[in-house]
Amino acid sequence: SQQGEEDPQALSIQEGENATMNCSYKTSINNLQWYRQNSGRGLVHLILIRSNEREKHSGRLRVTLDTSKKSSSLLITASRAADTASYFCATDLSSYDKVIFGPGTSLSVIP
Amino acid sequence: DAEITQSPRHKITETGRQVTLACHQTWNHNNMFWYRQDLGHGLRLIHYSYGVQDTNKGEVSDGYSVSRSNTEDLPLTLESAASSQTSVYFCASRQENTGELFFGEGSRLTVL
Image (tube, rainbow over all chains, first blue to last red; front, top):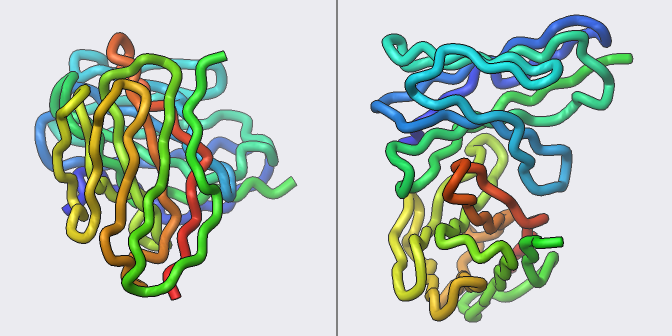
């Protein structure tokens, strides 16, 4: 069974709006990562948050982690059409463990 | 620049044939992974390796094998291809310091 589950499965917003995606996982983790995938391409790393961190920022991205609820959220502020992609959360249990991905959220940003 | 490359990018084969998908990275990363991506399932882990001569089964390893004879390469072999193995396959390597995965561009395999 998959470690991470994203919510919602699909999200459609207008350009300029904020997009929030959530990820829930089942077991204790070492870190949680978010990746982006443009159609037909490989995944690209966006941001990593460690289990002892609660919030992290990178440009227009904000990630939160709540280890008590085993959940994370990815916020993209002031979305652009170019943000249209699928977004995946991924977890690993330790620094030298397998990395498990959730099924992803498909984001459409309408110009 | 360091990179990770997969080949072939597209392949069509017949049921029962052996197929090998190549993955080559030039970062000298110890950790490497193979995933398959299917609609509705996201990425599912097939096999992974922590280093030379080390291989481990992932969530969906049945029908697949890997070998790690050097740091740079982790070829994925389908011993006897089945239609259920039609998918897009992604190889990745992990930078140990940051935990970040670097992905190849994928190999689209069709089994007829």
